[in-house]
Image 1 (cartoon, rainbow, N blue to C red):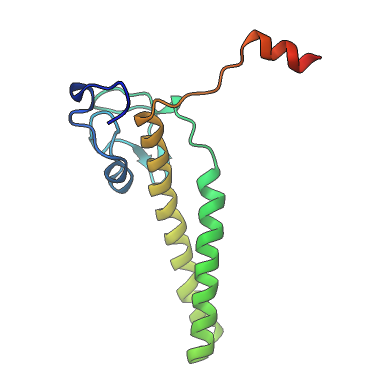
Image 2 (cartoon, one colour):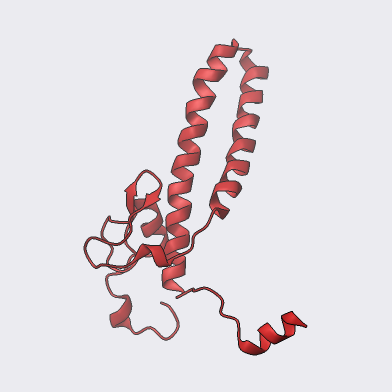
Length: 137
């Protein structure tokens, strides 16, 4: 439960894992987080939570691409050494698997980050006027 939140405020809200795996709204728990594949809806159709105020960014894309790429290359090399299939088998096998893993991973990771931002009440950093004066000097 988030700090300062009463049991009434968190009742009915899914956990971060549930919200990520099933695309659930972090406020009401309905399946309204995504408008399409990996694109967030603008707001929840049930409770009206504005998803555009959350800044998930591109962090998950780069991170997942590197991890999934390393796993797929390792598996492709292992298959090539173990069975020596023709090139077309590699293309037929690894291209769709890589695309599916990246899209599926992006969907889950973006949803997890949005749910974590909601749960922790994360927001943009705000500078104070004294910070602005120090940076100008």
